Image (cartoon, rainbow, N blue to C red; front, side):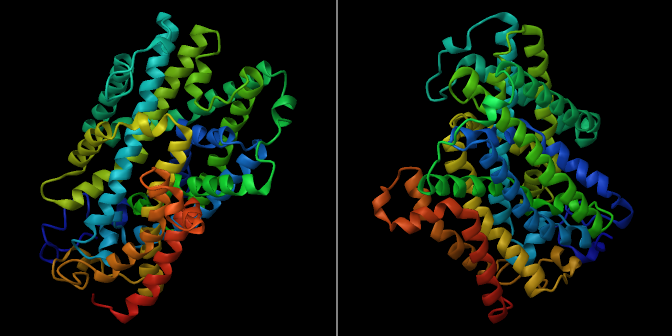
Length: 485
């Protein structure tokens, strides 16, 4: 039920942030699983896994890394989903319990800005598919492009990016209901493209034998473990975003069993299966072309059949559109709405996301597989891991799953703490982020590697795990000492 009108402050409540009534909590196990199939089957899943091949892993090492990472992230995913299902509240409202009624805006914005980056990346991928389709249909050479100053991409690439961006904005303005049919159809289409890529790899590489016998470049423990650590953290970091805002979806689930079983069925299996397609095809490109091509858009453009290539590329663009709206608009729209509920609706929050997605120049994040993993995925996981640890410690350890939902919407309620900010929550957040800062500064080359102890720099490879563990342990120890701060 919604809190009664006299129980909520207008600065903390609107219809989008209010608890979902029981009669609207209708998502079954199948609905939750289908949500994950729709979000996991996308181009970035393919490229994330195939980039591990580019980093030197062989097919089974990369597949195992993907599976383990998604099995691990399933734990915080289902735990943070619990309060959403139990109380019908979205992610930014749940944050008020651990960070304060107004302090919740800071971690919510941290999550929201990452979503803006992901929105931009997915939009760039869709635009790249349009650009490649144009190259196939009209016969121009993408390699002859002339990058624009500052942007670093050509005018044609930027135009295709903005075309796909405008299509995304159209559906944001129309609302989620307008793309339900596309959500249902896109995942099977992308699976078909994946199967077509596997068939092409098998045919062009003369069977799977040459693919599976490709030797691993990481032939010593000293070479393997650093890449494995980075890859595993990147896999967890890939869904570290959704492991925080999963209440935005689980609030619609009928029961805890539906959300747990649905996620367990939908996430690890789908991610591993589609990632394996990316691993297989990227391994095949080493056999066929002599080097790893980790971007499926580039692979499809090499099919040699213009009609088949154009159809596959358009399918990728359509599937990317539906994934982008579901995975990268819902959370930041709620997060921005949480800033000023009376002024920022879900739709307005979605438009803010879209514009910030342009300003972040996502093509710079995505085009280099090393930067995609080390700078983007691991960098933001160093921020989001501590938030996940704090949320789980607050809800399960400190509160024993007991929340006063009405007071989450009250300015002077029990979640006010110190002027609306939890000193304990933010103190722990800062303490849990700091150990990963040296590795990040070295990675982006602001400081040299010898500026810090080697073990401290190396721990950045496991940034999400370090941050999550510190956030969980410190909050569990300190919150009982200062319950009202």
